[in-house]
Image 1 (cartoon, rainbow over the protein chains, first blue to last red):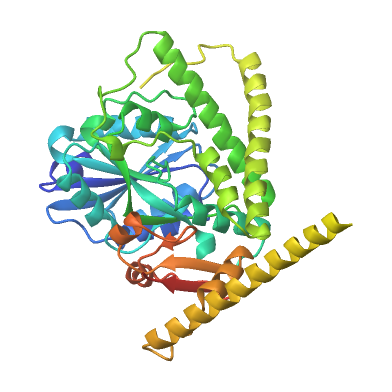
Image 2 (cartoon, rainbow over the protein chains, first blue to last red):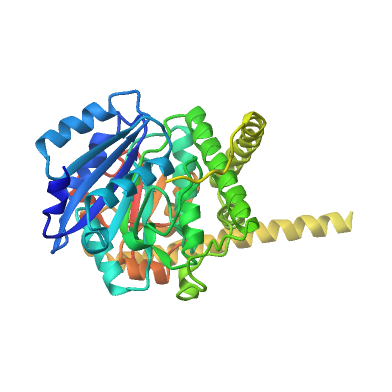
Length: 327
Length: 104
């Protein structure tokens, strides 16, 4: 495995998937990467970090890797957690390559997401080359309900909220898919616990990123209301932990931002996503759309409420150093 | 009594005015659209019908021009899709919903 990466004469464009029990979706995700056109001078490599999987994820990835041994690498770790998996992936790259010269960029893609089109990797590289000051580029994420026949409440909420969301001038990285310069990624010390890593990356880059609608991905929408509430609760916990960790770092005199200022005003989003979505309620005239926006806000608030109590329980039970960072 | 009658009259006339103006606008756009139709085989929809369906959640509005154009200005609630890329990736648009493409 080591020789394979070391002997690589091209620059490596890594697409990393952090997978935790993703047997139902991971095949499509990997296929969409393998279908991409490679930017000239780069060879594309898919790195799957299976973290704490107890389903068939590793087996499925292993089977695909057998047929594409030079394109797919599977790393298995027993403990779950996206940031832990990212740390493990970074250690792997550090061990096996001369990273500064062979890996310019790394693209993170969630296991339940697929690239739309075959030129997403080309567009990512082009974007970086056009604007060398950029540290990261986020993709535009579309829910799969724009392409299926679902008529349940969750599908309707996603269609409505994402339609209005596209009209807001948001510039934030989404953890579902973003590309980041590898030299910058190495400077971001992710803690080994679960938290909103995309928000952490965004905050450290001081606005040196943008979301580009040229690169679009499709993500899987929760299939029912229960799953949606669970998803939002996980998100709310991650967000809350991010805020607490950020405050903890600042409180301990850690310089959180990697740069003193952003590239320009166009590259920074100072709004509040939920606030903006709620404000769109005033601009929508149909009762149906208004109700869907209210349902969205209620679900998110309910998830925050649940997250608060879950976090409280977690803190009471925490015995070790809660914020210990290790790589 | 007089006040009530005045109030009723005002409400009634406002409703009539709003109805009349929307009809007039409908007619204006319908006429304008007729002139512009190039490919008869492509189903058309008026902006007002589209708005009604959109408000009921039965229509997805797609910006049909370049991404740069979308960034500059687009209709509120519309999304940007690159149809060529969608075809490449083998995605189908939903059959039970109306997907309306517009350009300015």
